[in-house]
Image (cartoon, rainbow, N blue to C red; front, side):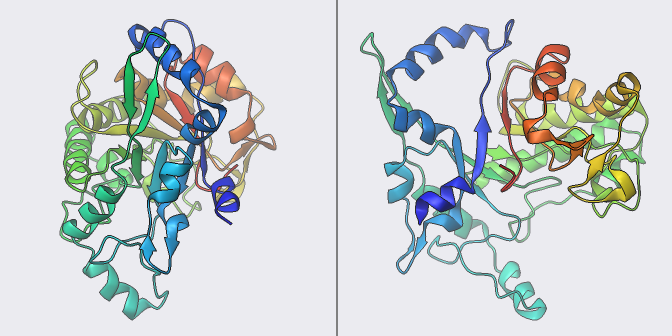
Length: 322
């Protein structure tokens, strides 16, 4: 049962490229990877929803440790109870409001403390490493899962200000809110271009002005992670690479028809350029497709993201995308 849930978890696709900003760590990371068993390597490349670990006793971290999981996430509607166990949301409007209103900081801290485990690896030179998991949350304009947290306007509103400092502040305070819960990874910023207001997530887009989109993404990433070369915040994941706002008829998880790739790439990758300039740690693929090829398996991950944009972090799929 758990194996099936893990298969439906979010998969991390880790690829190494040349001239990485993290180059000084590659040799050591290689020694750690070589020392891992196959099960450990598989587990470290998986991200699983906390709800997968619910049983009659609550949310149990035992299986996460058993399967050497590298990351866990809370879904868009997830929240813990007083004991740090994930709860089943009633799905009724009045009851939902009551449940979310009681989603306090202490509840989230109890959940994260359960999963503060480490995977121990001994490299060939005898050096020991304790690898802790990435705990991810969909914090896009503040850590909105926590009742009483600081929230900022959605991207389309911030973009109207033409002020990158607003994006920096949004990223910074998002990171502070997430860190307080014991989590260390946020699925943000979203840098979709404002193509089609028919798209139901149009509010997540950042306008159409390429120079501003670049600066918005760079500023948010610096606020979220810290200035380039100094990770003082939390890990970010710029998303959703790279056509989510450009689908036909604004269809969510739809298809973008592209004939002129040169202009399409230039216009739709400025946000990724900005985040990469600020040393973003991960990129999330879009649910969408380009010319019917889903982004999660699209050659653009290597040809555009890796080779053209020189991204050297890891690539993650969207929720249940694989």
